[in-house]
Length: 139
Image (cartoon, rainbow, N blue to C red; front, side, top):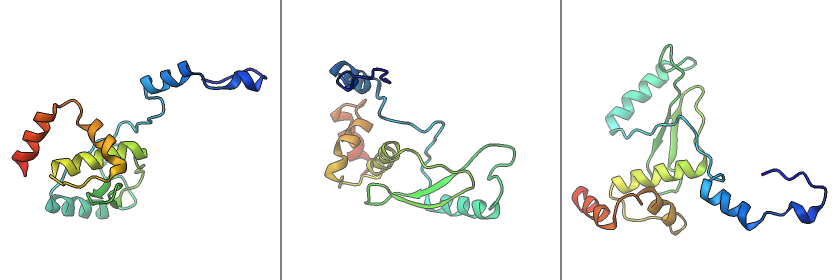
């Protein structure tokens, strides 16, 4: 919330301000609409071919669609391989959450200690037992 007082002592963030930010997740910007889709290597190759054929123009005629083609890697960010005109990357926390979720779906075991909390928040709606059963099944 914006302060209007000329007194610097009154322009401090209170516990109530901080609590409101945490509860509302005001600090967590989300890029909307933003969709993530998992592709096989073959599908990604074909999609990249279409992206190159449409270079300089819209990827889907008559629609405001922009694409970013990413690879899931060990790094916290992954790798942006290619993108179309108008593509805007998601905010860092949103991208990290998506990346870690795909790594979980891929049964990757290593999660950087800096990202463990984000990984757990991404799957928190499932119980530990459900996550363990899924992980064991797809492995």
